Image (cartoon, rainbow, N blue to C red; front, side, top):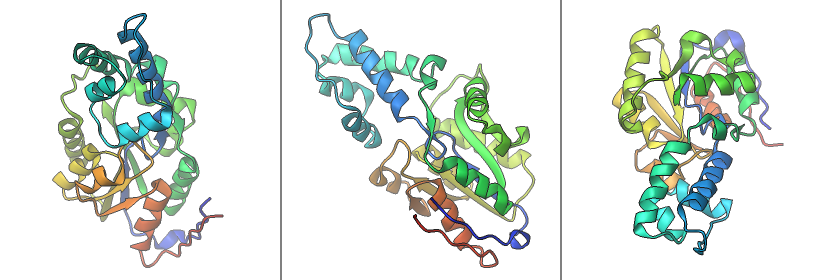
Length: 250
């Protein structure tokens, strides 16, 4: 766990932390693996032998950004089956029946509480649709950390293009609507988060608690790579000389 010692009155006004939801806050690995298992079983022929990866093996592939079609082929599907596998996965992975498998990242809720104590302006920015975000906020009582005007998500009828195109647009809207801040940081686990931050000249921290590994995040040159949200906050606080902060594993 992380232990914080805080002088609340000395935090600079309007230090804003924008965080992605999946990755820094929610662990999506079980959802993605269950969808992988389902799509593999639905795509293969009844008597066809396939090589179903373990969750650890599968998650290594996902974090290395191996394409879905290639994962299908590596699992024993034919080229045509792999294409069908990838299509089915895209249709399934964000459905409410599988979103139920998501769980908060260890220490994430405690870290959000500490962020509130620090007096940061806390914003969530996600590629989830409104109903998908709200369901998770309600299930885990996470709405207490993000007021309604600090939630940036896709509308339920939004037609997605690419996360690397949609997230910078979401960031642009947020920067237009939110009051100005003395300092702004973005924390995320994907290239879309880092591109959105860099496009708008915001300091970016990549975290390893999500769907990309260090080498994939490094390509996009974040200001820092941290293991999780707690370490990201520790790094941000280290840049505030007037705040007394200690963090140690115990």
